[in-house]
Structures are given as structure tokens and as C-alpha cells.
Length: 156
Image (tube, rainbow, N blue to C red; front, side):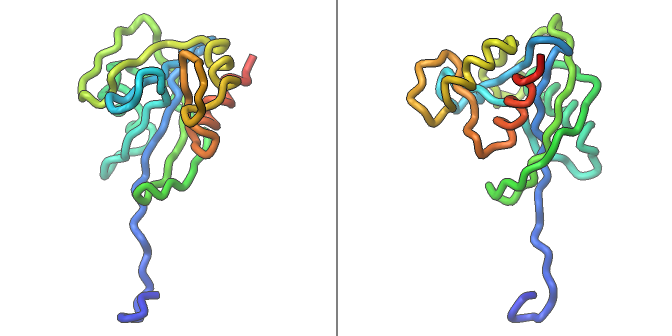
């Protein structure tokens, strides 16, 4: 309740999707934003546009950021993210690894397919806040990105 007006107010929340793209088997795409250090990789993410479903947003963001077409978009979970006032909605989706990457919007500097074993080794080495010598640094444990990556890596 606003103390001045007495009206009940509801803060704005900006939904964003975050997605692990995999090949339906043993490989997943991780990407590095242009502003991140060389070994730092994570999932693809972006804000939902007005009138857009989460699933359509996943497909659009993946296409815009790395040029891949995805299918079988599946919801995994969500996390409030107060930077600035977002709700991160997590997904995974399947893409054909024969497709070529295309970095269309300048946000992503590089992307690559990593095997489950490579991801497991990076998870064991720590996260991007550590002094790890791993060739692949992944997000910290407080993020839904880490949770999604860990759940995919745990599959056989």
C-alpha cells in the first residue's frame, strides 16, 4: 500500500527466459557474452516481449543470439532475479548441431557445443567466481543457470 495515496500497488516484473540448448544426446550449447572474460560461458537468455509466449521467446532469443532453430522447448523452473526486477523462467530445447552458429546481434562473442563430460569437469572445478584453471568457467550456485546446467550434466 502506497503510504501517500493509500492505493495498493503492484511492482512491475520483467519476465526473462533462460535456456539450455542441447542436441537431444550428450552435447549442450554454452555461450560467452562479448563483455565476459574468455573462459566464462553460460546459457542463452533474454527478455520476453509484449504478446510473446515464453516458448516463442526461447526460440527467438536462440535464433537472434546464435542463429540456431530450436524445437521441443520444455519448462524447467523459475527464479526471481532482482537485477533489475526480473523473473527468470528456465527451459531446455533441442537443436541440430549441424546448424552453423550466427552471431547476429553482437551480444554473444562465441558459442560452442560442449559434451556432458566437459560440463561435468567444469562443474567440479568450481564456478566463475573461483580461481579455477578450468578451460570452461560456469555460473555460480545462486543462479538458475547453474541449476539447469547441473541437472543436465547429472543425466546419463
